[in-house]
Length: 512
Image (tube, rainbow, N blue to C red; front, top):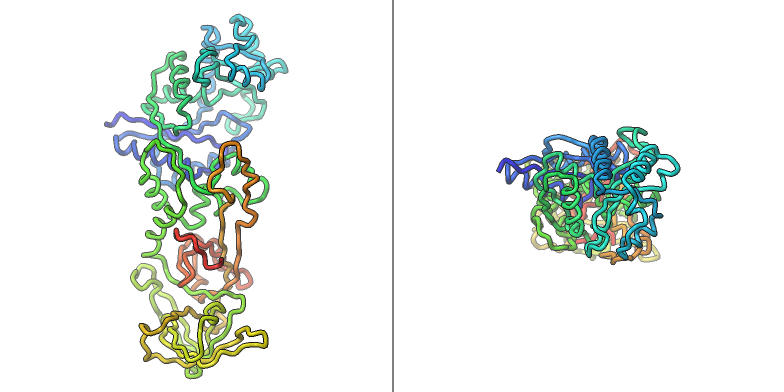
């Protein structure tokens, strides 16, 4: 109690996704449970893939998740100490410089064959190390490896790479260095140096745990306890930053916050409440079982949070919408103020206009028979007297009478409708689908073979006049159509208000 110190250590090479969110929230959970603290550390050892934009967005995402970190650190803060340590290991004969080509080195590691450079003298190693630091032509051919055990059945202990040359400038420290430590070398050092008591790592690192502790031992550092948890995998979802980057670079999505992306910014933009995400992850706990989770479960939790409070509005699909004329309807339009949510006052009020002619969805009109009594929601019953069709049998208009004394309990159809006024709002209802068509990609399967050709569908609609006031990020329910999040609010009549459909865990959309 009170002694636990943890770290959440993302690499700034992308935005935070739902898998990282699990790691971040577990760190916070244990820190709170044991009255300890969490450090946010940027593991910035590969300048080729990293940027300040990613650092800024990761900080934003961690704060969105409500992670209370004690401070922010960077692996790059420790570069000079890491270099001094590498040099010390060379002098102690625990590390050597190797110029074996990469493919050959990988094969030798697999086959347990010692590199020809393994027996180089300390002097030779230090000379090549200086070339590496200078980033000279000779230096660029080399890397620094730990001298561990090339025969170990655990291949991670077969002389892992500690340092590589990289001439690309670093996003924080510019061109100060030409060499960068690997994650395998930097992580055990920085964890021990920062006084981390427990390093949470996902179970795919399991085979590298022995390497982590062996490197700490060689460095003469304090042993840090490793706590494993299972990685979060979601159906139909890619969580590799390299693959997500491909979608961004190839214009398949609109950026890292695209609502089709499993990033925290993406799913929030799609309409997920952070409380639902936290609940979803903490329900799984810190088990080590590898599990493939369904999105439906997450969206069902989300629905339980948004349904009791989100305001209700009405929309009619633009295509083939038609008018129902109520012969005994009001000669002059009138307005009533009604609650935006019948069971939650906090949602506020809306103005509903009542007119003699009202708009209906074509799909609803097709279900009505002549002389059928229907309920017009928030108004009362009406009896449809005439269904007028063109020569192709398409319904063009309906005529009926209000029958407000009729009982709502006796009608089969409860219809949403909009008054015929010039105050209606143009809407674009956007539905999204998974980016890939396979529930789970097997080892060696290429995600490019499983791309979903159509992942976004836009439907034009009209909405009630109160939707002029929707704010960006506001969540609402369109009665009988589903839940939506306002992505682009009203600016001018010619630009539609853009609403993103929020899945509700049932996965049957209005539009299919």
